[in-house]
Length: 286
Length: 246
Image 1: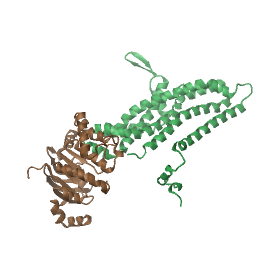
Image 2: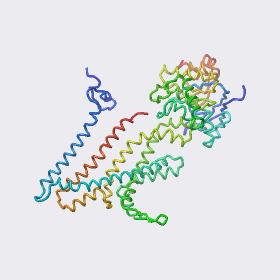
Image 3: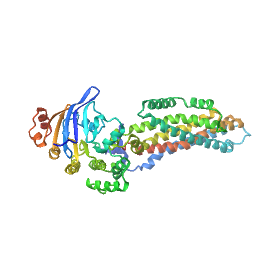
């Protein structure tokens, strides 16, 4: 007779027994796919350098040397992308929290207004929002007699924070509404006000549930920052383009853009894995 | 009988087209313990939820001590009512992110604004009273159902309410742990706390209640002293119900 953990099934419920299967430490199993993914990407990157080298005309410096020469500039651009992503995430999260709370307001106009704003920005293409911010916002404004410049990258950051705000708003609303109604009822039976219930009982439980989807939004935003190149911000894609045009060697296209790809992968992939781990940790626990 | 502490007169309540309470009236004196029994869907839980304002009634009146529950409009009045009338739920509804001690202390500290040290001392005493001394720093997820329900009772008691409502508090428990919760409730009744219990534990109702109400389809079919009602039900519907479960 087969033991329970040796059976397999399409139903995850029945496969729970497999979790306790002896001989596979949980850690080892978890890191295997991420290693495979990373190796695959590095191999592709190496292959793109090899192919480029084979195509290169004689007399030029090697592809690798050229890439290394430009790497500091490209990396500088990449760091700028990450800075933009941090800032846009902070702004988006701040306003998204309020928008999300407004979505569960008892006041109908507030609730409806927040709902409309959330869905408007959630369903608008990011690039369109970016263009709106670029062309509708002034390049400087005057505050109390002093002129404050408002550079392109700041406008782009603001543009990117709009969809983040809308997504965070939905995450907050969803997490709050996923808390069992019994929590609200027992809190109000203990004479807590609605505001106290929200801040002391509902939100502390909701934050755990918000964290994984919030990190997902961050990953999407981080890779989305390259959109800023379209509106001329000096970020990684723009700088890579600049480097390529000054070299004027078509065979460099693949290795250079593969390098950029690798940078984003190395940055976002661990966050994505972490998110998955966190989702597992917080799943089903009520 | 002196002036009743809880006075319910002809209350009606509908959810959409379904009328769940069709004119219910009763009086409960201070310090009295009453049980409400009856089949599922007879409106028992709704009745209890109307008493502390979790549900509003369509018609009739409810007075509990100084509170005219049917006239409550503002949050302030609702909160004042709930400081006096506490409720324990079938699913315990403890706050899972707080320890047993914190669960008990939260409302007195943040709602009643009482001194934290004094509340903590009281919380320890209450945990001892429900036989859970030593479980102060356990989270609800680390306690059994019966233990969680006793923490929930202690949490309600910490508010020093004048009335406790128990909504089928043993229905989610296994038979062994039911007893430990019932023992706790019996002590409260013996202490003279006004209690309204919705229950399926007929033996317990017979033993602990001073008055038993049998409800079916939104009305009180029959009520009386437990000894009389259980031994000699007058109404055919009550007979049929008791025959089914006793």
